[in-house]
Length: 542
Image (cartoon, rainbow, N blue to C red; front, side):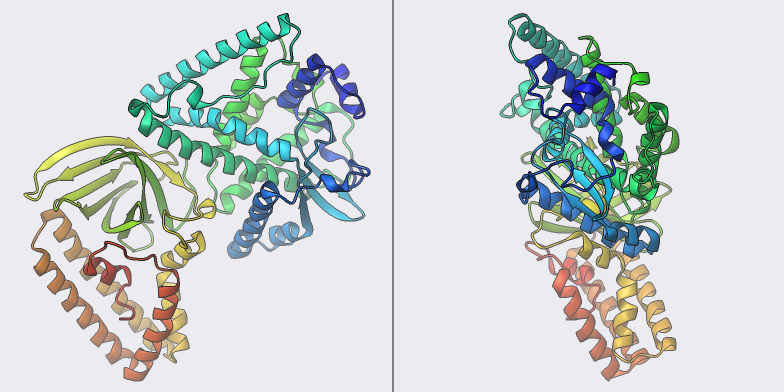
């Protein structure tokens, strides 16, 4: 940010001309706002503007992010971070502190530690999310990479031409913004699957960028940047990179991937590149913030942006085109969990698959609606943007088709539901921790520690039996009647073994306690077969 730009930012009461408005926006895009470390409360930067603090949907969304961060830090046992997040309060001003320059701020004062995220900043993040999704599509290989570069080039050329024409006519310059539908019609069936994929990627970019924004500002508090002012710009730039790194590390620790953030930075860098062609990007040496290119370089230098979040379940959403474009969700248990069930959800219908792991490759086997079987091969289930091979077999176990499909691995902490109303990410975590729940309810039923240990061993044996037979079914497509009979036989044997270990009364108390909790968060089994329901409930309850 040059000195002229800085003086204009200081002059908050000035009414900028169209040229000056653009200059302020460009300054903010390149460098962010110099008020990042101001020692003040929200009332001070906005005197007499208390009504400017939004209570609308944007405020609720950001507040939910902070609530989620607090819950995740408690679950991870990070006491220091939990205390810090409890102390920080969030406000979302409707009006920018500096006109034409949307931003976010870390502020400290006598009334506590604050994070301000302007409503216009949230809208700007959303506006850049589609460009970030275009950047993210490059992760799926050379074809998508070429497509992304070609599309961005066309957009930048169009934007620069429109900008120059507006400048020549003395009109207000256009706002920088990329939308897929400006280049490809949603009604065109040729692009139907791409729109499903890009919409999902744009959501990941937007949500991740807001989480990063909140944690970046919290990082300024954690690193004491709001207490002592840094007067030289080099130190200020270093502080921004420090807050970035702090936020990245906390995101990983709390169960977020950095894939969305990395591509948000990519969108910011692409923005700078396009504006640079118009001569509107200043020198970093004159700025209080690093360039977005340097921030992206720092991120990639310390973290793997392509890595999926560390979590108990792999939640992968896949655009599929048969019979119509739809987003299918596959929930794969982590390889270390000793679980094997993989629910596949499509338009509210649940089909149960079985998982086999081979290194980083996960194979999911399931029955196909027409009577054959389905095989999904996730070649690297540790990637945030995996490639999935879909194989479909007919009733005679002959391969009908094989397709390569892009997928998006969703962070569980940002997952609201799996296409089924009422199924929250916290419920999925409960599902993933089935053995832990089992221990809780066995103790509630009065079982001894020795009996609990034996019951867990029995549950593991039951899982292995069902896995062995289940995979035999989906691979070989044996008789459904035979499969159902064997499942029932294994379930009865497991029940009798638990009764022998716990005793009749303790077993019934356990079943009632555990069964009630399972029913509270299990999805409705619309269209699923009775054997799927039996295995999904793990035979706990009736």
